[in-house]
Amino acid sequence: MSDPIHVVCPHCDAVNRLPPARLAEGGNCGKCRRPLFDGHPVALDENRFQRHASRSDLPLVVDFWAPWCGPCRMMAPAFEAAAAQLEPRARLAKVNTEEAQSLAMRFGIRSIPTLAIFRHGQEIVRTAGAMDTGSLVAWVRQNT
Image 1 (cartoon, rainbow, N blue to C red):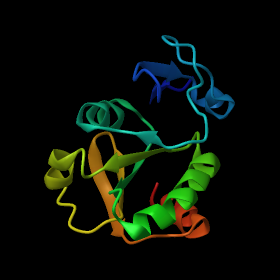
Image 2 (cartoon, one colour):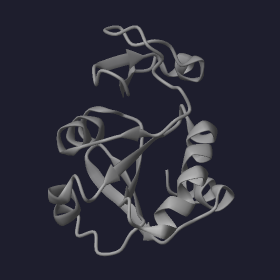
Image 3 (cartoon, rainbow, N blue to C red):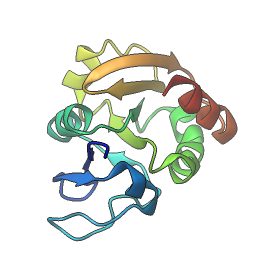
Image 4 (tube, one colour):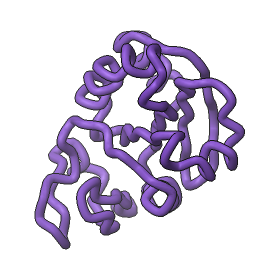
């Protein structure tokens, strides 16, 4: 029998354990009872980022963006569509660099949008620039 997979709830940030064979079924959070996967990116601030990056066994795909950034706004619907395609194998998240400036500094974000994939709290790959849905999904699948 395989070890359970830890999944952080996108609503209340509780850590849940799921058997790997049941990951595709999704499930609900044991604390707030809401779905663990809803096909939408989760907005993260500094505190939530740390919990989602370090406590989940799923790859965390982060879009570092800002509201004033035209390419970021253009890519937002593609990122949303990618979340629906990639869950439950990966969690997609958005970090507003204007609100979470310490995260942007910590990871050396110099251009936006920047996409980074984290596993167990460690950045494993990043790319800068906007992508369409197909390219984004392919990039994530290639790197996770």
